[in-house]
Length: 121
Image 1 (cartoon, rainbow, N blue to C red):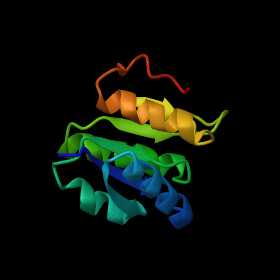
Image 2: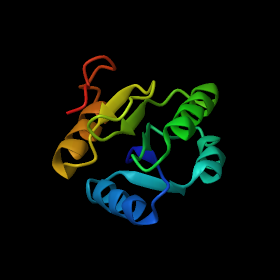
Image 3: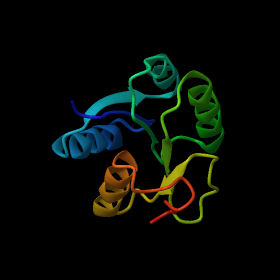
Image 4: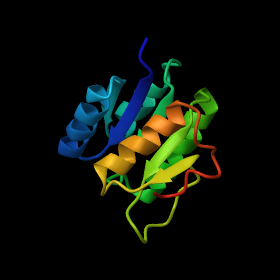
């Protein structure tokens, strides 16, 4: 059975592109467009990873992280551009390099990255 990922973004084009990349890698992806949709989906307990896109405003990301942490234990990967203030997620990655992004996702889901060593590569 493939690992389930909840991918959240405020940009529908970026959300669809991320979904396509993840599904090509064999992951089962649920895409959530916006805050309300993300909260609705996070009630489902079967996700192995939450990905928060860089289009989500900082304060909304922080609120989503707090909500996710209350309802489930899946790790949270925040996509952030260089110079952005990092949110208190488990992992951080840049959205600017799809190859590196996919490697980070693969490593997290394979248990090869620790929450402290994932960095922003």
